[in-house]
Image (cartoon, rainbow, N blue to C red):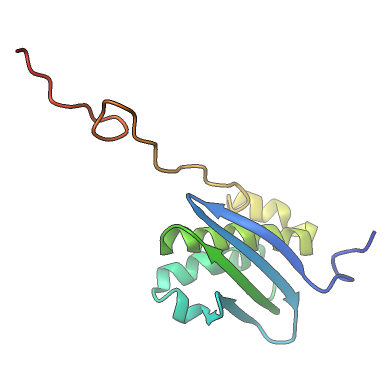
Length: 135
């Protein structure tokens, strides 16, 4: 079986709410993050979203020397950023297994399963019921 360094790239999937991100990391001399054929700072315009995406690098303290291409679908921009973060953390663990304890301690490998609850029949929303009237 080929090790992680012999492969051309590592591909992992990250999810959050209804967003799914396919993350590919390829070792390179300079770092570049491309999300849906756009640069990271163009696709995620706020600093908060860019910090969320780069969180696995900060937690693992791996030098950011990767070409990263991401295809992300579904959900809003915030859940997309968190899906990219999840996929990137999984890919970094496969690239270097020694970083798993630190990334796991930062809670980046856990898939955040919180999603919108479905609307039930007879109710206005998932749990809100119509106003009760005595007669």
